Image (cartoon, rainbow, N blue to C red):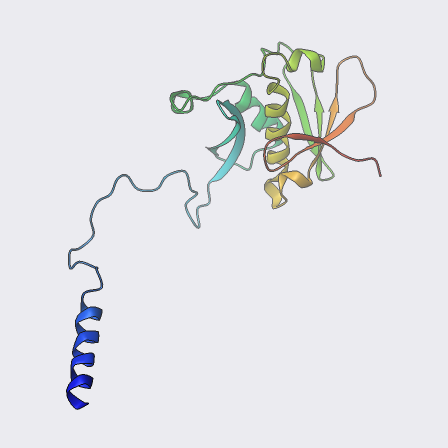
Length: 178
């Protein structure tokens, strides 16, 4: 019995010593993680939405001050930068001679389109989603989530705005009437 116990203890010792972890140090396995914000960084970010082969994709750009909805839209209108284009990102926001006007107010965004919505939804129809989600996320920089931000869209030719939100998937959803 004592011999069996000794053999069992020796076997457990050998098995636990051979747990499969080698004695080598760290091994390089590629580039460091990227795309994450540096903890404790005082830098501010604008979240812009561009079109990928799979739908809308959010990208983060560093900015000097917390972006307003208007500043974020101005960045969006410039289109994807070289690195974003290299990743296959494009834009479906048409050229807008009158520009976009957006102003944050009362936890919401008032967005004025210089063209009818029909002009913003040609192609894949993602241009309007890009604009609304970018504006909502800029207003949400105060700690709210973009699905909680109403975007009141004022369309050319109409006096009454329509209210939408950008959900977590980057889709426009109507805000139910109270």
